[in-house]
Length: 342
Length: 265
Image 1 (cartoon, one colour):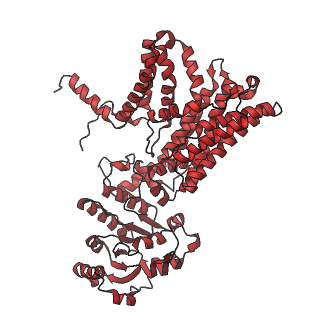
Image 2 (image 1 turned 45 degrees about the vertical axis):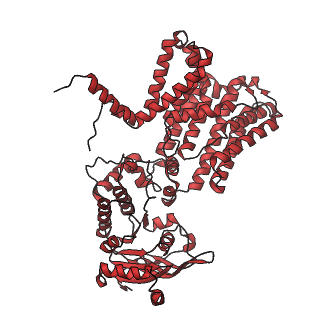
Image 3 (image 1 turned 60 degrees about the horizontal axis):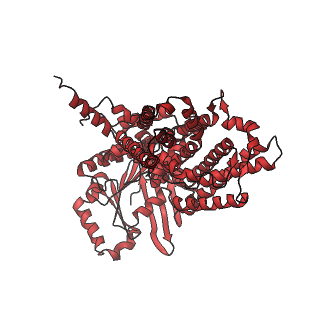
């Protein structure tokens, strides 16, 4: 075999590196086009505050998509968990109320996920249909329980739960950014270094192989959907506690950006292979796009098109580097640009 | 039938029957495979070969009958794929033995990982052992394939080599090869047959299922012929030539031997 190794060949082997490159390019472009905004720390602090909820969702979804499944119910779980917390906070005795709220929200998310898992793995409903139905159902249930009203929980700012989940470390760094990063590290280890993660990859790759090699496909999928439900509830908590208010349609805008972040990160839509690190960077790409493009001063009519363009380029770059095409291209470019050595 | 009481049986089936509803898929199947023996299982589509293999590997239970592995009777109610693995029955399938997008070292250990506490995988150890298997058991050397290669980069024959090496590493007493050479080029078929020879050198038993009579003839010590859910013949290789075996099978294919089936069943 004649494989030319180029100095850039290693790039495709390091997980998440292509997406990190895109993120760096993007921020470089923003610094260039909107220096007033992007040379000051404020905008970055604001990203660290707004990106974590969709990032947390993306991390969970990465595992689900790696298993060859999809979960469309997570926006509703965000709302459901936000309501569960807010209700507990308003109605339970004070010192313990927020803690119980967190527990109820996470348990609620786990329950939704568990039911999704049963539908998909036990009964055999395609996950896209099962979780779409779940999204309708749990949004409906949330609106019903909340009476269609929003709940203001401004007093949550004085609680330890608020400081723990969404406080400002050293007065500036949003705690949710650290939580999201911690979850990314944990899920990276689960996917890449744990039996559960290996089961997820093989199921996404080929469920028949997983089955004959002794993996309990049904149990693994149920666990996975339950985990996704809990993670979505956690994202709901981060969101609700940060903005101090629950509203019945919260989370609705997350669906497509979160999916875009996962796929930009290099997780295969066909399953079998997922990149937690890619999703981490992908989420920051998606999360900073709108603010960044607006800050460049482009006419607002252009904003969406430019966002779409950047997404397409990001995915294309990822595919090319992942397949080693960029490495080959770079070796060809260096071949063209340098005088022939003898 | 072969009867050598001194020799251990890797596996023995006695009067195994399988019904799917009212349809009888297997009728009073009795046969055995000795240690260090390669048995070729031959039969047309629908003869019941896959059903037999699935019962043997614990994918589903038979309707009645007895199964012995290493001379011990198996409790068929508690028998499943995991149990079969524990008892040393390994299967190499035509196409569902390996995860395509996964690296080799993961494929070697999927389902029975070397673990650290809390279920985390000991990657270093797994790679070490996988490398050992690749070099010593299946002789992958200097082909640009490492334990970090993805299965999708391997040729069909190499894939079967990995699956066979894995089965041997996990101390299989009986390796079942279910159509391992379908859709492979002649050169690749040759590789697979070489791997099968290694199974016998390792002192293990093997059931080789294939449509290709020529491969089966070359590799096997004995042939079991199935037709419509029954074993219709068990032939020693020394008693029959490839040509005679071929003709024998053709006669079944044309339904000429219908009246004789009873005496073998």
